[in-house]
Image: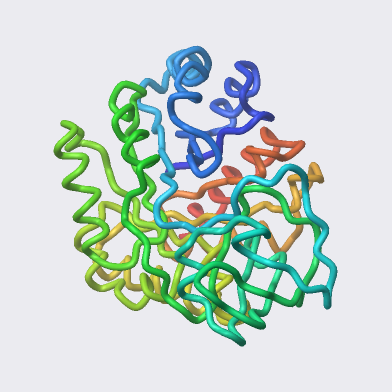
Length: 327
């Protein structure tokens, strides 16, 4: 079974990477929504791959998580406090957002920001600006995710940034591409053709299921992808959270039936971003995910931004090991 960390400041140190490998880590994810592979390449060459070789893991995985068609807030000079009941402008003269959101949004629709931490309701819309009311407030930071709930937004499979990153993937030793917001088989085919054109036929594609369209087209995605990733963060933005467990179980069941390995990700040990010990619910979640057939588990903020990256990996690996004993 594979256990993945996400690269970030807390684990971008040789001694921490050594400890993560000793704890059972088998690979690392680089989130390219917030950076570029060009910027990460020196760190990978100087720290990650030497740590992998020292741990006896020259076959360690390097997973590149592309930007893909994900929608995000643009650059802000400083965080913006959004208060419940206030009105806010998106677009020209306001908070920068992709034009595709402006053209798709209609009065009465809701926009989730930062995995649903913030919620806006569209009051008036035009091609250049949206007037919204803050339903759920908090601080808004640059580059946070956007989701127009209940609507499909027309975006390309691969962005220019994705193509730039893929051009460096072979040189950096990438073994897997984590493709976000996969909507249908065509998205997989576009990425596969791009990899083939770069001479990267051996690189494996992990299709993220994180929106309703992708879930609805799972049967055509399964034979095209090498693996599936049940990405509960954005998937949980597109439906009431109490419905998410049934979706996760259904995707896992269909992956098992199709013989397609799957990865489980998002908030596996979320509390360990701040605490050295997880909740009972979190370890039960991991245990059940393994019993459901997950072939890999991935930590995100726990290692990318958390205070206890090594301890989080230890709990992940040990909990999964107990589940494997009980199969």
